[in-house]
Image (cartoon, rainbow, N blue to C red):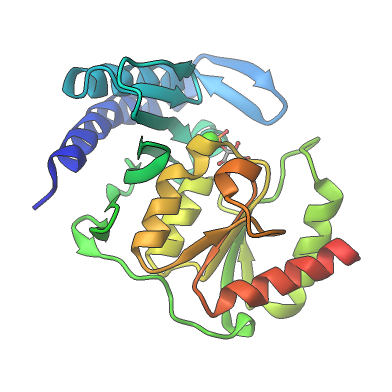
Length: 264
Ligand code: IPD
Ligand code: CA
């Protein structure tokens, strides 16, 4: 049984996803405008954003929003805010690579309390509520239990051309390649976090992302028994924009490996 807020959020996401699926089917005809290198925004992003805000406002009037397409939309309720990325993995979407997601989180008094990440192509609905566990299509999730970094499969987002921290990313990938079994760069931070929650990736590392990219994924990972941290400190990734998500045993091993890369 889903809670009322998860029911509201999944209904909004499913409605937005129907529009997105139509756009995905006609990808070649999408009108595209360029926001900056590697960062495209499509008509589909904006449509999806609008549907999500409309549906969520109908069900929870007064809640504020922070979305990738609209920015900050103040509400009359000082305690609640939805964080939305209508398409995380826009570049994949544009290239018809079926690795993108609608991702929505709810904060209450600055604390993440509910989360949805949905891949409309694979029809995978990841949900989490604070204290209630994480689920994939209603099946309970648990992070992977591997204890040695040398046994792990890791998601590391390669920055786009001209992106920030290119030398650091190269150094980190070089160090990780010496230690882990394999590295993937899926192109959607939100889905990578959901995959950590599902025990598919042992860890994910991503730098210079926004709150809406990681908010839902953070709650999914925590509710699946995992941990998130800034890779370079004990700070909250929502504040620094850099995130490392993994299990308790692997956290210090990944931090040590990334520390080596910073020294290099
Ligand atoms: C991007 C994805 C990607 C990350 C980028 C983000 P977008 O979001 O999350 O994994 O590496 O930094 O900008 O632009 O597809 O919504
Ligand atoms: Ca994004």
